Length: 126
Image (tube, rainbow, N blue to C red):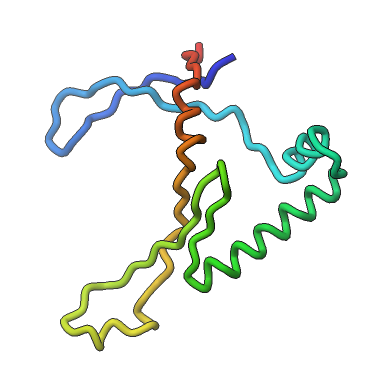
């Protein structure tokens, strides 16, 4: 089947006159917790309900640890961390906790997972 993509034109920079052609991914859809739980339960001895409860519990625990400043590494999957941001300040004292914001949750794929990207096959969508 392959990972589908389309081709679109884009200008690569400010003042760039000539557009170039780029591959743009076409998503096949979205896989939710229910579907993951169903497929996982078919591959192991846990029931679908057990797997769903585990995944939901995992998200809750991860949220707690991320709020405390931990990074979370799930073997063969990757590492989750919170990135923070603040405005620039003239003195260190001005950079108070109220001026620091959690920006996003970052994910860095595990080496094994990234190596699997070499095996992705692509197919241009017609």
